[in-house]
Image 1 (tube, rainbow, N blue to C red):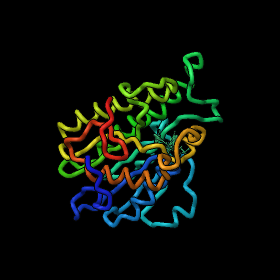
Image 2 (cartoon, helix red, strand yellow):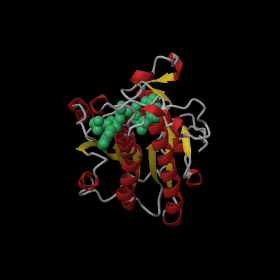
Image 3 (tube, rainbow, N blue to C red):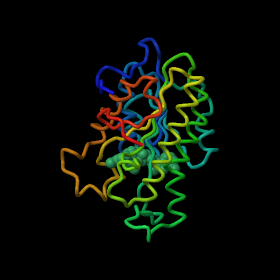
Length: 256
Ligand SMILES: NC(=O)c1ccc[n+]([C@@H]2O[C@H](COP(=O)([O-])OP(=O)(O)OC[C@H]3O[C@@H](n4cnc5c(N)ncnc54)[C@H](OP(=O)(O)O)[C@@H]3O)[C@@H](O)[C@H]2O)c1
């Protein structure tokens, strides 16, 4: 798609948009939340993560409401949606590549494969976004534009895998991409104006990428704000015909 930054998110001008950003305490999720709240057409932004967002972020815009939700716990997702009757835009910006508190680091070789670490990666990177879809899609309008976008990663592409390594993260993102395609096919039958996609944000300076930034040149390492602006530009250009695909920050389709 042609990135249409500054031309809005593609909704009808008279449609007040109710947005949900999951992973709002993270690098990219935090920037997405701030930029959405600054958009005049956005009526409200639900901002979810396990950790609270810093209080100055909450003060920055009365449209933002934070809730503490753990996407690996279905009851927590259901509780977060209590009282929410309508959503037009869901962006899932959660993800797990490493977690020192659980001794999780991306594998360099099959010798490092560990069942618990793999299960944790799938719980956060694949099953969480699937459960979020299960509980948020019923709140989407059937007769107007709606977007379900989950942050994936280029390394989840099987066709693009030339380096190897990062077995769990790659496999969990590939599985997420399959979930997205499957949701899109089902949604096309009942929600003809809903777009369901995966998004690759580029390499972005966040906690997730911090241990792996050394080989990345400065111009290829985006700030979270830069990446959020690119991603919202891509979202703005999406039509239902694009549903089921994975798009990079520059609007290019990433092969499965
Ligand atoms: N940064 C990059 O270079 C890069 C490249 C390709 C793809 N991506 C993808 O982009 C997305 C965002 O990444 P990021 O770089 O912004 O990462 P990040 O800064 O580590 O943020 C991750 C977010 O996920 C939330 N999260 C993790 N586990 C959760 C759970 N169980 N329940 C609820 N929230 C949870 C974290 O919040 P709490 O800890 O507060 O819950 C945090 O808000 C991820 O899907 C990542 O795979 C990033």
